[in-house]
Length: 276
Picture 1: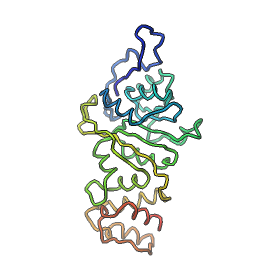
Picture 2: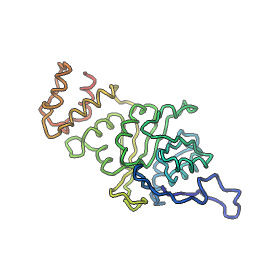
Picture 3: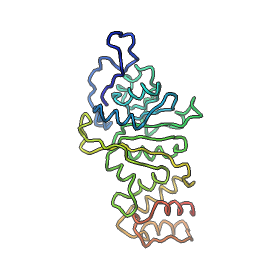
Picture 4: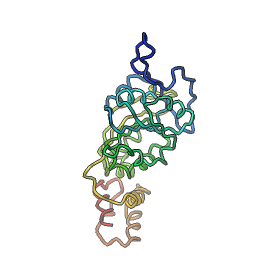
């Protein structure tokens, strides 16, 4: 992400808030971290407006990079936690006293622990997620949905399409079912490749995810296994995949397996998991 500096008085250098680097050394994006830094000021402003951060909120940013989004978030919220795997970028971020820097792989972070000292607040999580880990990270966050107020993520547009897809469509799949069970989701912004440095080869989008307070109670691992089995051979009727999976578990209830996985709505998958 590109560096963004807050409103500063040119006549009074003492008025400068703590910044990450006033003369930053150019950071070379690292492919192994899937780094594409957001640089378009208009897109950055639109994302910040969508998040609408307030002082005192438990704000967490995943993958802050060069702080394009971090700086305006810190200006509005006063303080936030950032999770950064790249040790060079983490060192830059520590120069800003407003940031609590967690140098770690987001896939291994205990997000519940980030609420320490803010037990009455739910987390507000955001970030330009590395596209190579976006789907695993969305699944990793599922167990903490009850402790999260909302999530705003920049993702590959194709992934956002799958997250929000309706049944009986090409994009509807395991990701659709697992996330729609737990979140209400809506795309809020389309982002072209030219908004990044280096530009990715795909279009991107920002999605808002709000945990459902009325989500049906269900074992996450059971539901995940059930849905993964159903979509393992999506061209075949479910009797060849999920039907056999249910028989192996001694399921004696009724579930129509004369359909394909994409024809079954989220509510039916949830009901089946509860019946099991």
